[in-house]
Length: 324
Length: 250
Image 1 (tube, rainbow over the protein chains, first blue to last red):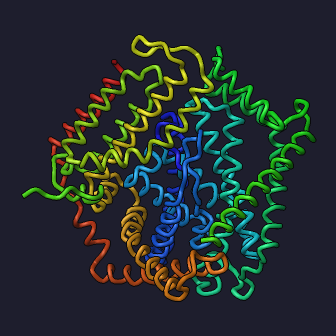
Image 2 (tube, each protein chain N blue to C red):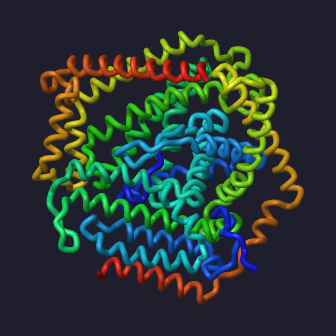
């Protein structure tokens, strides 16, 4: 989800830096008042290093100028508490920016907001109770909220900067589902680690979990069913959102960015559009324009096709592994 | 005797050169000014960028950063920009001119995004290749970044190698227990990963205690660089001013 410098305008970059700096300032003030800070310091730094290592595994998402990887905000928040987690994650991003040139210096404010402020300060306090009750489902749910929200923030920031030529709706349609898939992986990975920590060292956790109850009590079949149900709910929710909101949002963002639509189209683009129209089952997600139920059906069938594809790929991969 | 080429930017930073000796806080501010100038260039102003590129390459040469290392690291960052810019070529077909040639506006913005990314990433690479971690932390302290943040920054960097060591230990143990088994099944994944985390935190606490015994925060603050020399200030101001003036006037 790291944004590069060339993808934002200085105005957006500085505004987001201001917001993130304010959040970090509050966080620092809270840490300073904490008398046990010196004792917590190694936990803060090591948990951050752990997330740093986890974020190394990433890939480029075509068209967005952004990378797909685990966020780690929820893990840190559950270990350290929301405010220290924000600082720890902000420093992870700072090291990546200064030493690895991953994510730009001017875009640092945006990156801290999308990957640290949203999961640590917005989603974690909301989901804390659920996570304490059921670590697995709570964490999965929190990841499914925070990662797509962060991805959506990336879309908003890039579009407001007026850099990418990709239309807002397509951009969001590319970023949000990819991050939803990553969120499922992140949710499960985070939950398994948290469950282990809750059972072996509950004193490391900020969450007040019962060590006896924390266990990964889910068979693979139940897991698939859970993920399917989650994807279904979110897909349907998004379908409702997609059918009503983006036109207005797109318009607003375009107005803000002062961008006019392109005039002439070339033969190549027309041909590409033709090919896309014939291959797309549901062009623009609608049968008749603006129809709400049509968007639902389109979303449902999209989910089904994705699920079948995922299943086929996993079968293929596991068969190869068995053969080897 | 010829020295072997440094294998990482970290090793580059250990050398001694004119750019290495600039105060880290000033270097950070100069970098910010440079990036602001580069990023604020609209696609139509692409002709301004080559001058910044030449300036960056000259600074890189003075900084003695090994070119192979520099371009390899640069190449890692460019795919992200490539995939962003390429969409413009498909969506934006408004005609534009570049040095007398007629191309589409999408292609122009594609070139501009690529160049701007290369400039910004190159700038950060030069900073990383000429500044030690301890100097970066000292620079942050000079810029009045809260002490808490600087401490965590230093410790996190120190702990990355500890984490790698612990991960290697756990992996070796797993391989010895499981002989021929390929990969790690989901069932054990959580406890292995959690195990690495818990072991590393324990180790981190031991290291931190040892550091405190050797006078950690005070000793590290005493090692910060001397006062900024007037010549450095003038040089940094001249660099920043020329970046901004060129951007505004050209």
